[in-house]
Image (tube, rainbow, N blue to C red; front, top):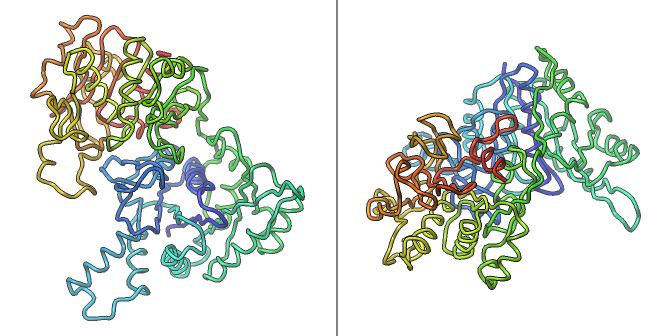
Length: 520
C-alpha cells in the first residue's frame, strides 16, 4: 500500500512549502523509501512555460522537456532525482483533459461536474505515480478558491486509501509584532480552522517565522489546533536553506512520520551534502527580471552549490542607461558575471555592454542560453565589424542576423510548449575549454529556446580550435546547431545554448558552474 504525505500552506504563500516538501522527501529517501512527488498548481495555465518570472519565479525545465513550476527544481536538488511531467499537475491540465473527454463522449452522456469528474481526474494522476511514499504539495494557501478541487481530491484520497496511510502537514506563518514584542498565533489558528472545514485534520504544523518562536506560543498553537505539541515544529529562518533536511532529521520528523504511517524505517541516517562557500568572490547576475529573486532561482543555487557566494542581481536596463565611466565603476566591484536566459528585447543592450566590459577586461563571464546569443552578437559587432548585428527576435529585419529563429519554428504561431525543450545530445569539440570541463565527447543537457546561432550565414565568426589565436571565438560543442562558444586566451569566457543550472545538485555541482567559480 502506497503512503501519502500531503503538504499544505496557510496564512501566506511563498513561505517555503516547496523546500519543506523537498526536504521531507530527501529525509524519507535517505531512510530507504522510494519517494516520489506531485506538485499541484491551482492556476489555469497548462504549464508554467508562458508565465512571467517576475510573478511566478523561474520556469524549471525537466529532462523530458516539461516547463514546470520552480518547486520541481527544489525536488531535484534536494532529492537528487529527475522530475518529469508526471510530477506536476495544474488546473489547466485537469480541466482541459476533462473537457476533451466530454467532447469525445467518454462520460456517456452524464452531467460533467467538479465532483466527481474533476476530482477523479486529479486522483487518477496521483495514483499513477510510482513510489512507496508519494509527497503531494498543494500550491497557494488554504482558502484560495483556485485550490478547492485539490484539497477535496486529497481528502477523498485519505478516505479511499485509509487515514492511517496519509500524513497531513500544514505550513503556516507566525508574525512577530515589534510594537507588542510578541508572536501572533491567531492567523495559524484560523488557517487550521479553514483546513478542518474541508475535512482535513493536520498531523503536523510547521511554524514558519523570522526568528525562533517561544515555547508558550507553540503550545498555544497545539492547544487551539488539536495537534500534539511534539508535532508543532518551528522552522525559523536559517542562513542556509540546505540545512533544513538536517534540521528535520534532528527533530526526528522522519521517525514521527513513519510512526503515523506505520511503516518501517530501513536505515536511520542522514546523507545530504550541505553546500558551503569556498570562494568569497562577488558575482553579479545581469538580469531584467528583478521583481523576485526566484526569477533566477536555479542559477543562484548553481553558484551556491558550486561553492560560490550568493550572487547579486543587477538590473540590465539600469546598466544600459549609465555612462561608460559609471558602468565601469559599478562593474569593477564584481569578480565575475552571469548572463542568464530570457526572452524579449528589454534589457538586452545593457547585457551586451557588460559582455563587452568582461571581454575587454578579461573578467570571467558565463552566458546561459540568451546569454550565449548576446555574446555572439557582441563579438560580431565589436570584433568582427558587423556593427548592427542582432537577433531576429529583437530586430526581425536586421542586416546581420547572427542569431535567428529555428527553421522549424518559422511556421509556428503558438508560444506555449513549442520551443526546443528538454535533454538533447551534444557533441563536444576536442581541444576546447568546454571539452576540458566535461572530460567527455558526448553530453546531454536541457534546452529551452527558439532562437539559435546563425552559423550557416556567419561561419566566419568562428575559428576552429587548432587554428585559433587569443581573442578568437571558438565553437566548443555542437548538435545540429551551435551549443557553446568560448574565446581563446580568456580566463573564462563561455556561453552555452543549454541550461546547466537545471542539473546542479548539492554534492554534484554542474561542471560548467564549477569551472566558472574556480576561474574567479
